[in-house]
Length: 353
Ligand code: GDP
Image (cartoon, rainbow, N blue to C red):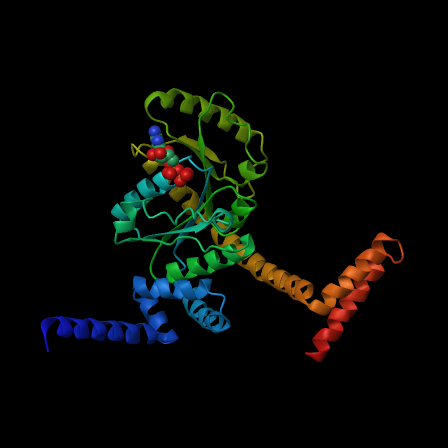
């Protein structure tokens, strides 16, 4: 056999070996054990399973999640939001590297409902967080795409559980302020950080209603070079604005800080502030109670979403819904009677199933 034919054969063998390896999917038990051992490949595979819409993957994913649930009690979940360009990824890079140097293991996830629209996932771009991606104590996962906000949020929540079970003790969840994505992130974190920029005295303009109430802290980024003065001004303005909001349920008064993600200034103070919040929240049991509340809401919302989904996706119901809608519009029946008719139909369908 000549050398070329031999090389070809070796190459084909290696492809066959690779394909055989790929086909041999690790068992659920192997994935669970891998996650417990902190194996990143196992973690990634399990997250892919969580993100998959295949029925067979779904049941496997749930089994893995149930095993992982009790394993991640000591984590801190931090939500980070801000408009595109504010410096979220630069901040996460600086913040993340500082945390891993302190001995923490961090996971970065994202809720990005915009990625399904413009196909540009906020964590999908490999050039972002260049140093952090190489850090062995950091795990970065681009957001699930092609999904509704509810779908992405569910997958992110489940991925958080897997990351925690794999030993990541600080979870950063990034989002751009698209739709209700901040609310979704807020509902799954212990601390919510809003990144802002200083502008020409109009800091408070264009800020979404509700987001100030959700923020546990505001960090004014890019406080460097010529920007330092305006960042200080913005800080005072935000502090004043935050005073106008009623105090938080847990007694925490939201803080305003300045930082420079690029020059790594003020980053440590932000961590110290978050850490002191966590200590305080743990002492007062707020931390534990808030997590319980979030889990409870997640459970109830899942039921609600599933019920709605089953209802509206049923073709018989859908047809009847159009008829009843017209009847309601033309005052031939009351909205209440129409709703009762449809719900009775749904109950009948269930009985038959
Ligand atoms: P994101 O869209 O919110 O993730 O923002 P990026 O992290 O991609 O940053 C947007 C731009 O702002 C990039 O050109 C960064 O280099 C720049 N940037 C981010 N943080 C800082 C900072 O602290 N100071 C300065 N001067 N520029 C920054």
